[in-house]
Image 1 (tube, rainbow, N blue to C red):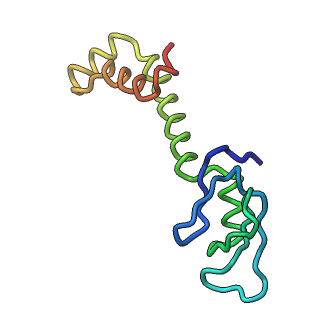
Image 2: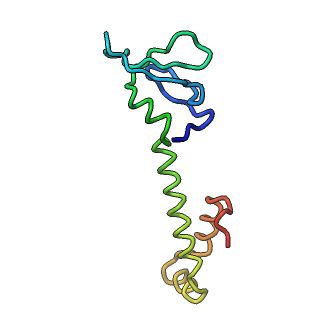
Image 3: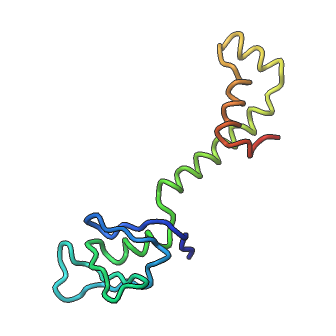
Length: 122
């Protein structure tokens, strides 16, 4: 479990708090319903915030990376794999691909390196 400092967690109905300021969550058992599902205890607040999201959904957002971040990391890894493969294409084959396939492998390689921020340069 890792809570990232400064990451915002949605509590529902436009309520957001920083993940590192949330100190506890408690399911509302009595009078639970739409707009009233979880008590969220936030640092420096005397009373808990009433959240419309379930405690499970809030907890998942607190301890897991959002799907967008996970997807982005997977895409960067895929680009890195493609770059590794492209880097192994010899100059003669690159020339054939460029001339007959109208596909500039050198330019593609440069674009991937730019996208990865130079981390994958060899």
